[in-house]
Image (cartoon, rainbow, N blue to C red; front, side, top):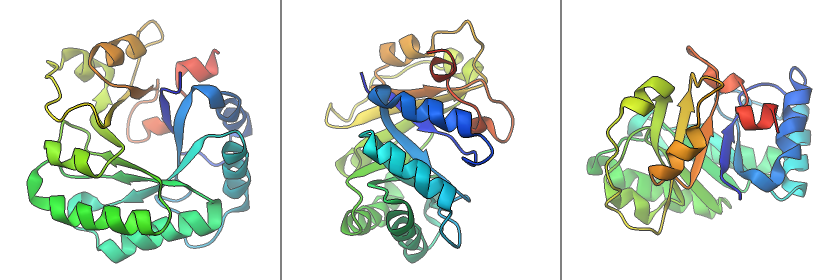
Length: 215
């Protein structure tokens, strides 16, 4: 099943073997988040373009990363990032990071969604990091309703999603020990998409899920 959403924030020329493992896992991937420089960067990067092309050829969704700073970042800057991702890396979706959970900013994100669709984003992932107001399900294909450590994930009291079945939920978990079963726990908590990595600290998404390291 295509259940893995992989945000892997390392350069392909530095970690080619890891990117090879991601491409090889194509049938299991819901998508891969492409993030050359906290966004697309200021100019095209040939190494990211090459790996994005390989992922696309393997039938994997390639999602361009854009930080929205909880609605504080100008919509034009976010759309510029998504356009550069499309033009430079052939992305077919967007991963919007730092999205607020409350309904107050929904109209802003609704406008962003329309703009993202207009530049060719067929898949829209919103990373709230916590359960958002159900209104966001009206514009997203995937809602990231948890991002945090394995310890906090296990300790969290799960609540039923009130927004219906029309959107996939995703859980992003880091600092995961090798003997854990994050996929089973994600499935039990209603997340159709997930990623769990051993990385810790400020840059956990520079490590691969155990399932890709040990296929």
